[in-house]
Amino acid sequence: MMRLSHLRFAIWASCLSHVTASSCKAPIPSIEVDVAIIGGGSSGIHAAIQLKDAGASVLVIEKKSQIGGHAETYTNPDTGIPANVGVVVFEDTKIVQTYFDRLGVATTKINPSASATQSKSYDFSLGFPIPAQSAAEAGAAQQAIANAIGAYSQNVLSKYSWIDQGYLIPEPIPEELTLPFAQFAQKYNFSALLPVMSQFNWYPGNISTIPAIYGIKNFGPGLLSSFTGEFIIPASGDTRSLYRAAATELGDSVLLNSTILHVDRQHKSYVSLIVQQPNQPPKHIKARKLIVAAPQTLKNIGSFDLSTQEHKLFSKFFSIGYVAGVANIPGLNGSLLNVGALTPYNTPVIPGSNGYQSSGSPNQFLLGVAFDNSDYTQADAEAVIRRELQTLAAVGAVPADSSQKVTFPYISDHAPFNLRVSSNEIGAGFYNELLSLEGSRNTYWTGAAFAGHNSGLIWNWNEGTVLPALKKDLGL
Ligand SMILES: Cc1cc2nc3c(=O)[nH]c(=O)nc-3n(C[C@H](O)[C@H](O)[C@H](O)COP(=O)(O)OP(=O)(O)OC[C@H]3O[C@@H](n4cnc5c(N)ncnc54)[C@H](O)[C@@H]3O)c2cc1C
Image (cartoon, rainbow, N blue to C red; front, top):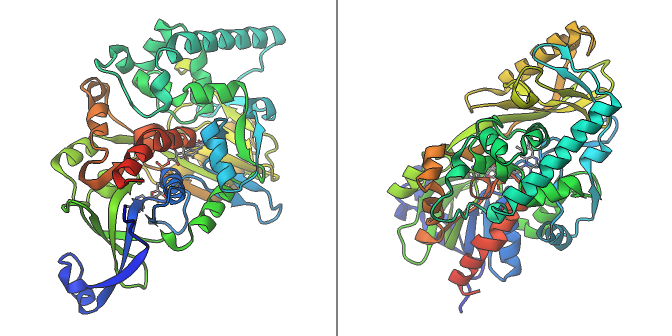
């Protein structure tokens, strides 16, 4: 097979009807590659490395100033301690370990539950202290969780073992996968696990009402095995070390700060993109295949040349919200956990955070504010924290002036989080239709909407489904 090299050539911008008139006066630089990848987050960068290793030329087009998507780290300038604001741990699977090894990033293993420092529990919305359990109560609760894990593992995960590999839902679609998750949990006798599922893999949406398939996806075999065993983390403690290594590896095959001006997938054997970077002329990219690894919302990709079917499917996604950050709360020592005193399964009231977890630096805490929709601002998230601190101050859980004195040295909105569809859509075969898009119009699709919000699952999806088909298509 003749492989396209990373060949640069020039075409006259006047040939490209969608570029502004001023840029049509000069030739625009062009890049020809085997695979263009839109989105330089967890899925896009993993795909780029695998394809590069398979001998393909790749180009990653990322809208932000760094790759890594939700992997964000804040390093405290006084202590030098890194705090992973987004991605923290990775499932302990062969695919994850091989990827870290490939990028030369040293790893270690941890069990976050076992190594977590003791937290005091409060209902952050009501200001109720949640009394510590007696040894007997704690033992009984642990036993109930262990029994629930056993029931879940034996009766659910064994039945849906494909759950860690995208949404390869068998036909006919099992109706129970569309049940509200609490109802499904009652049926399979693992309700005692719901608070843990919600707290640990925060924020899964309302754990009682989300369709069962999303509840299982949130806590599949890989995650459960690491939860009861160990997770992989970079030995440096800094998640970004993975993406620094990937950036070095990919070099100028990544275009940062990019805006996609035009996507044309009408041609039989290639796709054509026009990409703008600041203070540079637009670039024309001609690629044999395209991977869309940006969250597939109409906001992100609605300006592409979507087919009627693509538009119909992507317009069905809705998302929840997640603002993650670091807060300095002067005078607070020790982590706090948010436990809903009156909510089903004691999940925190939303919008709300799941707790303030010590970042390792004095008076500094990691937090994640969850919303049940995407209709909020970062200021709304900060207001939620101030309100929680005010409530907590009234019961002496935090210093009295915390809501005034809190600062946010780093805070970032991770929306759109958890792109999902309704139970009706799941039952009507949404995912099978979604998967039928793979490969069509020289385009492959990956990322959390296709695999689940978990790097391990995304890399499973890439290596198990997307990349084998794409490589075959390329003759690799
Ligand atoms: C706060 C938080 C904590 C998490 N913690 C963990 C964890 O501990 N372990 C774990 O395994 N998973 C964790 N996850 C989940 C994991 O981070 C995500 O599942 C994963 O990052 C999703 O990968 P992705 O490639 O789909 O999207 P992303 O990683 O978000 O990457 C998408 C990329 O596309 C870019 N983009 C968007 N639109 C465009 C466009 N039009 N043009 C060009 N580029 C575009 C974005 O800027 C982004 O870089 C966490 C998620 C969040 C939000």
